[in-house]
Amino acid sequence: MTQTSRMAAGPVKGLAVALALLAGISPGAYSSTEYPLEPPDRSSPRTTLTTFLDLIDEAWELYSADDPGFEGMFRDARECLDLSAVPPLVYRDFSAEAALTLKDVLDRIELPPPDEIPDRAAVEDLGLKRWTVPHTEIRLIRIAEGEREGEWVFSQGTVDRAEEFYERVRHLPYQPGRAGGHIEELRAATRAVLLRKLTEVAPLWFSSDIAGTAVWQWFGLALVLVVLLVSVLVIAWIGRRWRNSGFPGHGVAGYLVPLALSSVPLAGQFLLDRLFELPGRPALWVRLLFSIVGYFGLAWLVAVTISKVGNLTVRLWFGAARPLKQQLVRVVFRIANIVVVTAVAVKAMQILGVPIAGLVAGVSVGGLAVALAAQETLQNLIGGIILYADQPVRVGDFCRFGDKNGTVEDVGLRSVKIRTLARTLVTVPNANFAEMQLENLSQRDRTLLSEKVRLRYETTVAQLRSILSNLEAMLHDDTRIADEPLRVRFAGFGEYSLEIDLFAYALTSDWAEFLSIRQDLLVSLMEIVERAGTGLALPTEVHYGARDVERPDEQTRPAE
Image (tube, rainbow, N blue to C red; front, top):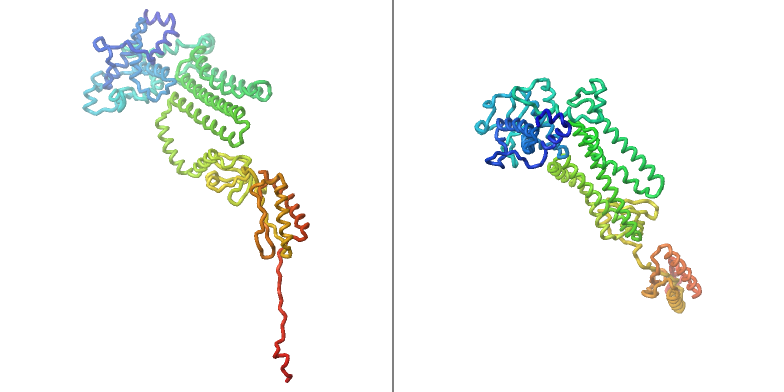
């Protein structure tokens, strides 16, 4: 089958297959008979240039003759280009179009005779690392390191500017004996079926080129973008109405937008390749944009899913747990969320061609600087982890910290918030709070009742014994007071009173209930003292004065 008959039979499908195989991964059939595994010679600018031109011409002839040997030739032709900076996502399509475009450029310009292009000997003698085609900006460079060290390839800048070079020389005829890169056939053969009829009745400008892409292709790209944008906005509107309606399953509405964004690459690929069949670099970059949106939607979908699972876990297994434990479970799921989303982002950057190694190195250096500048923040984070693990206090506990008392309202990753008795909110950094001596008053199983009873010094021994006996009996009879330990003892003589120590435990941990118990006991204590016929002592001072007494010798002394 000739080239002309092939293009007439099926230009779209035939050339699309050729372009796919140009960047394909199938093992090549191109090899010499004597050494079937020997790769093409790329040891100098001369061999790389000759190899690139010959491979595409021979591959096209084999393709036109239905010879499967064209696959390996296309793959080897692609290896003559520096594609290290091309994102893996568009690598196949980009390399195909770049190779055919550059081939068409080289076939339209005058190249120097082969003996004027440096060969391997000239490269070694002159120590060449780059060579430029005379009177052009087309440059070949020598790979300095890696598995392909020493090979010559068209530079990354040349590959990126292939379309620009093509626009500048496309008006020139092909050089004698050159057939071109068939890029025109590609762009003419892949017109969308839906737009082809429109181009037939539209003005001529609709088929003209803008930046190497036909107007109808720009129109198709814009139409694809509008269709996808409107679809996502409609789904977002439906999700918001569903979530606010309270209808059954309204919790699922939060998944609609992430799912829609995650589906953008598939829908965009279908519209670009299947429905409109749009070629060209703009279509490649639009596909790249779709992938970025898709990975963003995937990360969002993962974050929503992990958050839902975390809330469900807290509700089913930790519903009766203390608030601090519930918060700890949520923090664990939050950390898992960050880890998984970061992994998705790293994978996306790899596919999109972001240099992960350099990024990690930069983040490491920057992370060290941030760590040095944020030591206090890290200390508070570690302090929060200690508080979560050790749990000296929990949300809702009444505690004494430093010289203050209050109720713990929140234990966060950076600070602890405590509501004091004055109803003010005190925020203490985790690092400082973890180092304090904390007294958790809510964790006590009983409350200490310790009072000092002071009786007047006029109290007799009998009254004192009666008071001691009745106080001890009163405490033993009260079911709200623990039997052990319980003590009522005469402690000694104070500055202005006889002192009795009362020591017992109220069987409650609630402070309000303890205050009520203590009030009842103190009133009963006053009644016992009154029945004994004495009273409680007040701070008093007693002053003793001495009278002057006449001496005997002064009474018998005669008057002068």
